[in-house]
Structures are given as C-alpha cells and as structure tokens.
Length: 242
Image 1 (cartoon, one colour):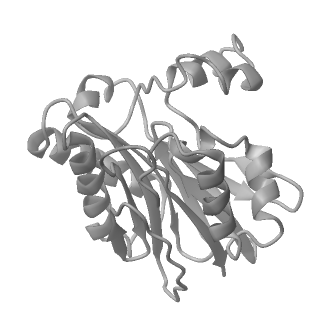
Image 2 (cartoon, rainbow, N blue to C red):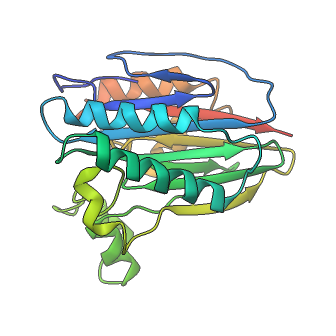
Image 3 (cartoon, one colour):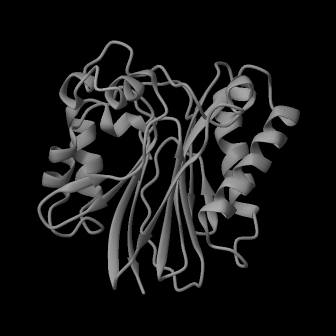
C-alpha cells in the first residue's frame, strides 16, 4: 500500500481479519482459517469522502459474518446491504471501488465493483478474472475497442459502478461481478487498485512477480515506485491452499 503522489490515502484494504489505510504499508502474513476474506477498495469523492467511503466499505465487509455461506449470492447480499448503509451514512458525492476474494479453502469467490481488479496466476501468464464496471470496459464488451487501445483510452478512468451514494442511481441497473473458482490444491491471486494497472500491463506484472508471486511482492512495490506512481497504489498477493 503506497500513497503515491496524492495528498491523502483513499485506498483501503482488508487483509484477512485486519483493515489498513496507511500512506505506506508492507505486510506478510499467513492464515489458517476456515474462511478468508481479502479486499481492496479505492475511494473517490474529494476532501475526505473517498477515504471515508473506502474505509467504511472495508469495515462493513470485514465485520460481516461469512461463516455460514460462502457463495456468490452471499457476496451479492452482503454488498447490497453495505450499499444501503452507505447511502444512509456517507456523504452524498463519495464512493469506492471494491475487488476481493472470499475463500473457504475449496472454493474462491471472486468479486468486484468498479475498476479495482483480481488476477489469477498461471505458470506462464496472469489472468484477469474480475470485470471492470467502466465506460471503456463496456466498449470492449461491445467490441468497439480492443484491449490494447483500452489500456490508453482517454476515458479509461470513468467508472460507472461501485459502492457509495454517488452510485445510488445505477444500482438498479448494475450488478456486482462475481465468479466461482475451484482452488484445486492451491491458487495464487493478485487483488489491486488501478494505481498498479495504470503503470504496468498484465504481462509485466507477471514478469516482475515471477514464479513465486507472494515472495516477490516487495519487488513489485519497488518496481512501481521506480516506474513512477501516479495514484494511490495498493495490492494483495494471496496463495490459497486447501
């Protein structure tokens, strides 16, 4: 987690059972638990609104009781509840993206809203397994823009969905993206805010992290600083094992 050139850290992360919102954070930890929740939020809204929205959402999702139901529907229900609370409790024009994993050892539920992302590692490539809610992603889905042009599109930061009052009017038309992944012994994931994907293409992230992504997290952070951060930049690398 790095503040980059911004004056305020508007990213927030949930790392297992802890919540963090710091200007600079590097942490490595192992968990032995029946249920694991990991999430990255990227707030928006000016003044303190973005920081408040991301922290609020992380705190709500962290405190949710996941032990009885690890499913796509459980994620949808929880985030719908969080959205309702956000509309009631947060300043009018703020919001946040969210991307994360909910895992019980056998299965990982990938979820996101906005343009924070989840990737799954394979031996020779990194797979983008979430789905942006953005104007440019809509153009890609409609085959009006290819992935290469999307990466440099002038409107790539125009987000159409997320958590918070600023997205209240689009919630009836949009849905949280979810997908189910079998762990199959082990699986490694990257969850990140767009501060990371703005400066590195997917292939370069895979190249930097190499065959041992968890061990090489500091290498990715250092590479990002050398490249030149343009935004708050946060990521979690997680290896899941049955």
